[in-house]
Length: 145
Length: 117
Ligand SMILES: Nc1ncnc2c1ncn2[C@@H]1O[C@H](COP(=O)(O)OP(=O)(O)OP(=O)(O)O)[C@@H](O)[C@H]1O
Ligand SMILES: [Mg+2]
Image (cartoon, rainbow over all chains, first blue to last red; front, side, top):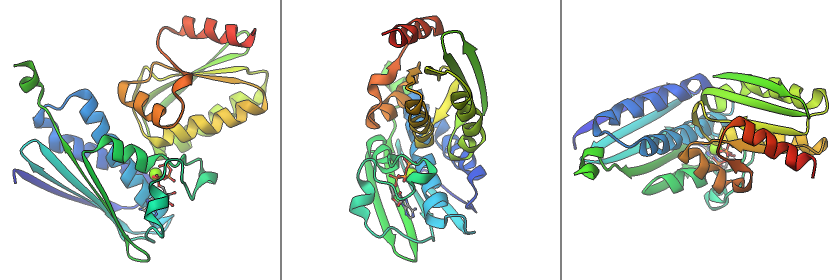
């Protein structure tokens, strides 16, 4: 393992940009491409906003982002101790949302899965949800050579 | 997050978004954009995303929500100059047909073409 970071914050929407910024800075020295970086930021943003919107739903609680860098492979888990997901299979379906009235599109999990190399969801009702993703970066210099 | 709305004759509005559009920021711009749609004879909404640095599914929700409002006034939507990552997100969400690249003038004439049939 090359590096590790743990960041915990209150489930408030203004912390979504903090989480994105932290993970972006954590991998900056890998010289990721603009698109790799954007995809990584998007996954973090989707997972953190899910924890805030669905996990805690306005209640106070902590969201934890745990990132590990191993060579060019980033693995990140994002955890809440909120309500949990009753039916993970349905939740993963594109367009599935339980918050349509809040203009959620139900695309979060589809986006997270598409932008990551590996993606898992672990959830227990009443105890919370942890999503984990890995993403491999191809440094720009390596491509240029 | 900054949002600039410019109205053009022939019922076209261009919305320029700057900065990062997420769940937090969406709440700040939604009502401003909605009132533009509902105030008059708007027929086409052009989302110019050229200056937007980041967007997640909250942006999809924002655009889909406004498409529903526009539908009530038979208006159309154009998503102009999304980044490659945003483009993927819009494709997953079934919005591929609404995207285009180019200058605002091209989008406006395209809009007028659509409006005039
Ligand atoms: N951390 C979580 N805790 C509890 N439920 C969750 C959590 N994350 C997701 N869910 C459930 O899974 C559903 C699907 O999540 P997904 O992110 O795909 O869509 P969404 O958040 O509803 O909409 P979008 O992400 O497009 O704004 C949610 O509507 C919610 O019911
Ligand atoms: Mg979501």
